[in-house]
Length: 308
Length: 275
Image (cartoon, rainbow over all chains, first blue to last red; front, top):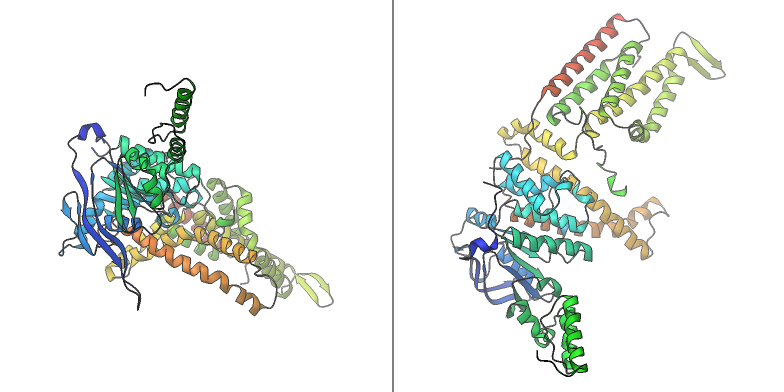
């Protein structure tokens, strides 16, 4: 009952909107004489249940502010936020309502050290369910399930401070999913990790999304991570400037560069190949496939153009 | 190794002692300390030594680990031994040379006091800190003190503070090291000069450490809020502490030890402790 999670993507084709932001604006109060600093301007988007959405943006584009609003740490200055159909920005909202929203939407932060509460892995994962006031046996089942899902069962009794960055983040993810959330926001959760840890965490995130049907909102500035998403939102200067499938978004390489962002290395390479006059597709993110694409056009020119 | 100084005493294991209920263990340690101070003559001390050996054996902690834990005490042990050997007067003179008079009583007294200190430290750490995780310890303490919550003492808050402190000690130790290295790389000197100078040299370490600790605290508070933490009210725990036959057995053993020590004090002849 508690562990039988069959909400794989197929079974919920009749998708419902888990999160909807309408015209959200936010300004940080300025100190003393400074004017308030505008962080978000008229941001609107919605996320369907089971989706994997990446939010891309340069430093200071407002993506972290957006994350804080989405998990109800900050209240937007203007606009509406709906979580699972519930208006989280209405005037008469109580602490209890916000907590109800937080049971549905969780967050994994950037610094793995500053989000683990307990010294032992499984105690930390249990922290959330304990706050919900669940029965001990139920907490135990959830913790075991969560640790297994992120592949940390072996480390259940280990000390949290001895783990690597990637492992700490996986524990944090386990802590977030142990509350049986529908949606998890990753606020640059891979930014402080080494390449190995980053891969570990990304694998875990995509597995959560694929196998457990958990909605993922992944905020990042690594382009390669965004290619794994179903949909990419690109932010600049507090607003969303692009939205679409990764293949669509990254095909617009010039616009991304203008926004001060990178494109995946494969796309960049293919873009230069195209500039050199070869007809290659830009929306390829796998290095092997990219090599194959370049080989294809090079062979094509050697033997005369072949059709597509 | 570096990050393990503070509370890194816990020795991973699954022995009889490891599996005792931490609530009981805290009480057992207090009881054991009382028993140690009850012992008065060499026979009751012999029994104490036996009990300490027994504790070491059932804890399955290597003797080396336990001895290493005693190392910081060497000076105190040595000092009290010297004082007792040279200053205590008795009837049987062993050495009488110039101003040095050593009596058999002084020697025995010194020996007993050394034994007492060693057992006090080794015994309590085997019973408690080596075999109980810090988290179980705070947990046990919280529950032992939970009746006090009825008179509005913040027992849950206190134990949450302890838990977080334990969690962040290694992190902050690591951070201190990083900052020290960073300041050393900029030419800071922590090890020479007068005491005042050295104290002043700590300021460039403490300020960044405090700033980062406050930032960490804020982030942690946010993270806890995101995980629906609203204080102790309505919160349950995953691990429920259970008393078992082990706790009863340990209690009985301690009672027997106490009785043995008292009986030996009364009925066995021997050199009594002068302190």
